Amino acid sequence: MPGPVRILLLGGTQEARQIVEHLIPNSEYQGVYSLAGRTQSPQLPNWPVRQGGFGGIPGLIDYLRQQDIDLIIDATHPFAAQMSRHAVEAAATVGIAVLRVERPAWQPETADDWRCMNDWVSLIKALGAESRRVFLSIGRQHVGEFVAAPQHFYLLRSIEPPEQMPPNSLCLHDRGPFSLAEELELLKKHKIEVIVSKNSGGQATQAKLLAARELGLPVLMLNRPAMPPATAVAADAAAALSWLSAYKPPPTERGV
Image (tube, rainbow, N blue to C red; front, side, top):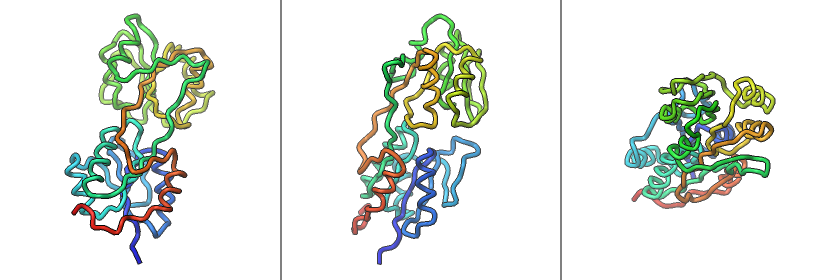
């Protein structure tokens, strides 16, 4: 009988946690849950875990071979483009499949006032020269970009403090998800005039967009980066697990 399917699960999202919780009690699967290591106190599953980078594509190729990985499940954040590209290239070299979990992007509705941008420079320029009160709902990694526009007041919310913050800013240390009522209260309390968001999709952080719609606030939305084609794409954890249940590793020697 063939042994268990060995999986490298690239995690850090709600979907990744849902998938690994299904895999833990299932003897048909073994593997490793991988995190980028940016969060100091991540929520870890009861499964083998590694944190930190692989050393680029060559390092990832070596890791896949050393660990005898049959399949990569890429359940990273929609903006983790470099990791997703590395996964596809390394998997192609080794000769294994990549299942990407790609939650649908948010779409504006009639009552929404969105301006969609492809890069941070264009987005920051769109804030304008006049001082505005801005809610940065972008995580902590790119907050330092807004040092280039110090005329604005920035409100941000993060589990951990950013490495660099604009001079006129306030960071609230909190973990979501947040309700519509909580988002409305936050935006009103701090007299927010514009929201900056990445188009991450999903329901966990959508309340801020519903609040913006209700208050008539504009949203500057950063578009997702382009991703290379994977072997298969699933919209959520359930679809990924359905695909996985039918997956059988090819009976060939990998990476030869």
